[in-house]
Image (cartoon, rainbow over all chains, first blue to last red; front, side):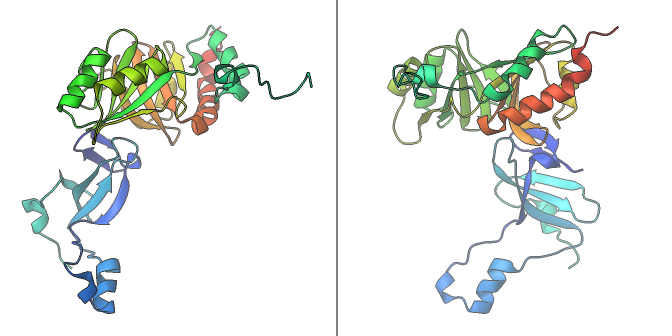
Amino acid sequence: MLQIECPWCGPHDETEYHYGGQAHVAYPEDPEALSDEEWAEYLFYRDNPKGPFAERWVHSTGCRRWFNVVRDTVTYEVLAVYTGARPEVASAGGDR
Amino acid sequence: MADSILDTTSGPVELRRSPLAATAAGVAEAGAGGGGVRLAERPFTTMVGLRVVPGSTAADAIGAVLGAPLPAGVGEVTGEGDHRTLWLGPDEWLVVSDGSREELLSRLRAAAEGPGVAIVDVSANRTVLELEGPAARSVLDKGCPADLHPRAFGAGRAITTTLARVPVLLWQTGEQTYRLLPRSSYAEYVAAWLLDAAQEFLEPVG
C-alpha cells in the first residue's frame, strides 16, 4: 500500500485518499473555440508515462484537501508532494 | 386517544432519539463489563462546525469565546472547561461541548459573523462513543489505519480517519480512553463492529 504524506496531515495510508487523475490539466483558455476533437482530448486524453507522473490526490477521510503528488509509475515511489506550481522533479517527465 | 404513539405534550428534547437506540442494550452490557475494555455512548453531545480564515479577527474572537485559540495543526485539540475544539482541516474545526447548544451558538454567532465565517450546529451529525480500558488501543488497531502508538498519537490528540472502513473522528482523551465520533448513520455499524472487536477483551481472563 502507498503511504502518502498529506501537506496538512502528514503521512497516511493510501486508503484515506482518493485519486484525481493527472495534475496540471489546464482548462482551455477559450472553450468555445475548440473543435470537438480538441474538446474530447481535453476531457478524456491523459498522459500515461512510464516514470514520474504528477497526479491529483484528495485526503478524503482527513482534511478533505486536494494536492499534487509526483509518483513514479514504475516503482510507485512518491517523489514529491506539493500544492501549487509543479516542482523540478515532475518536469523530468517520463518516457511516453 | 390516550395511547397515541405521538406524544404531543413533550418537547423536542424528550422526543430525540440516539442513533444507537437500537444497539443500546449491547453497548450498555459492554459498558458494565469488567474486562480490558468498556464501551459507552455519550449521546446528544453539543457539536458546532466552524469555518473561518485562520489568524483573522473573526478567528480570534471565536477563540476568545471558546477560552483558547483555535488549534493550528493536525491532531491538535484546544480548550478549557466545557468546550474542546478539534482540528479538522486548515480552516475547519469542530467544537465539542458539554454545555448548552443554544448558548454556545448564540455566543459564537455574536462574536463573529460575515462572509467567510460559518458557525453551524452539527450536534445531530455525529454521536460520541467512548472506548476505555487497557485494551482499547488493541481494539482500535484492528480496524484503524492510523498509527495510534504513543510515539505518533496520544492523550489530547484527535484526527479524522477511518475505523472498519467508515470515516470517524478519533479523539484520545486519556491514556486509555478514546472517543469515536462516527456519523449518525454509521453509528450502529461502528458500535456493532467495536462490540465484536472487543469481544476477546470483554470477559475477565481466567
